[in-house]
Length: 387
Image 1 (cartoon, rainbow, N blue to C red):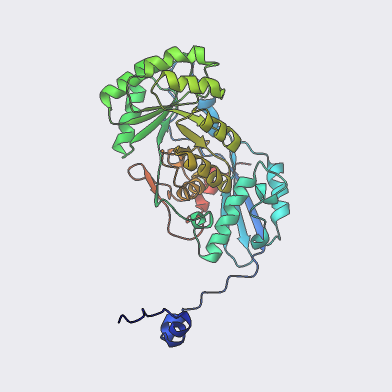
Image 2 (image 1 turned 60 degrees about the vertical axis):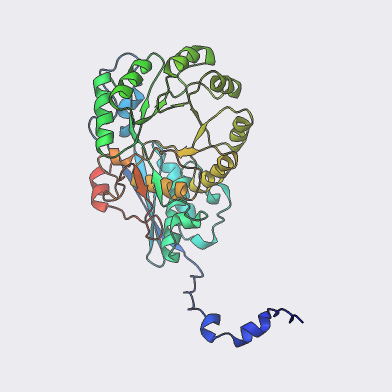
């Protein structure tokens, strides 16, 4: 006669288990409040390194915006909590001091732990600079709670984030020199700018001959006004290169779907609007998404791309180190941000974080320190500060 199987009795187990199994070291109690006692701001202009942007003798199609975009100022933000811990943020280019000041006044004296993190712009009065304050608030909270920003965004799903080398419009010899420089520094991917009228087919053939292993993205910034004007160029570029074309035409998704049907080139669509992303997915209109927005929004829209099996990269405006590191944490909190991202502060004369943004073999390792994992280089800030 078979004996009855032993029945697992949770109560008996708990009563007989060794005390060591039932007790764990008590975690430090989180602070009940984290009042922001001080907010400092600096206006800075940090030039690009010489020779990193465009060939000045490129020709009549040169986008003049690429010659002086680095002359547009940015603001650096530092929050200090009542516990003495600080948090860093960085605005995009060209933000207004008045917009920044309205958010400074709103946040000073507020409890960071009581902010509604689910609200757009954290409930701040000015949305244009809110993403910089989001970085600083998350950095402050992460340092206080012993958590990395990527952990607070849902968990670190990537230990390293791929990044690209970058340049603007280039003549043939200059583009080859940039390709050589990128590969010598360990990069596997190069993004460069193109416009209607540029000899892109000739440039790509040249790069493919001399640097066949280098992956490329050409960003046209919608310089072709419709599909009919771009399609002959697309067919000329459809040569089996390691190539992605970004935003050749406006986001008319019917045009994009036709473009994909008529050529085998992968096409990248820039948007951070979930509705547009869903429409593009339904229309089979995009192979890759170039996404942005604040950190919380980026993670949310990456989930849309992940559900459709479409990879993404994090776009940028060629930032400094604080903003770039916030992009890295946001990208690390996703599974779909696998295309090399536009995190390019290494091309500036300083990243303002002591050279902490230093890619290795085309990758940035997510810092293991709490918060953003970086510190402000105050000497560099003073050097590049403007009135």
